[in-house]
Length: 159
Image (cartoon, rainbow, N blue to C red; front, side, top):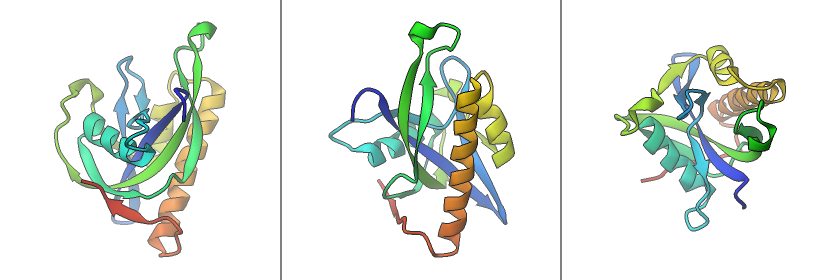
């Protein structure tokens, strides 16, 4: 995978029947899921898990393969030459442990699926707002299917 590919940890937890997602801030103040470049030696899954730990201070059970690849903008849309479109492999990570993150500006924040859509869509073009909706909706569906024991995805704990 090239420089236009990243891996993300779509971190979630269950609160009874409710699902909450964990979002973090970028250095420019926008909300995102923990994500980053893929190190070819580590692979995308381990990179997603490492980003969750570094950016959000969480770890847990992560799916063995991505449930979705989504498009994500890097740069700012009002400066077209700065805008790069990334393909991001999204891995569900069910959080089992939380710790402090060394990157305090990240402000890890738990929120409902609707609030996650709202936060992640701020300061984004319509095209990427639709990608965020698709990402959250697909994550909820994958979590629901996994909860019913019908998921082809398998989770493993990475250390």
